[in-house]
Picture (tube, rainbow, N blue to C red):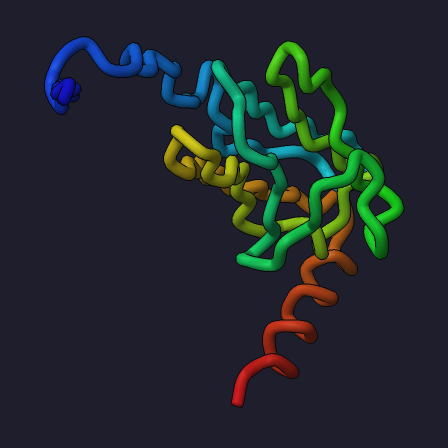
Length: 139
């Protein structure tokens, strides 16, 4: 009778050395004049998860074209890890907190980076619009 010995220790599979995804460029707070273009930058090294932007915690989605936000688009190149949010013809309604989110992947944790966009009014009616919006949103 032959005895076969199995080793439960030993070399085993090679360890995985996947690089953690991280920001190369994070969005930063930005001020633009009403009507100007705003570009919020987000660049990721070793991107593994899905990338999206949020506006005041509202998810804008994973597409370059953002449904319901015709002046918003994500410009860049996935292979290069570039996901810049462009807002054309900025208005007071775009004044918000934005976040670039990179979701988790098999070997990578989720990462997030915030930036505030401040839209500076050109005209007095812009301030009146803001005050009216603020007053109607209070309880």
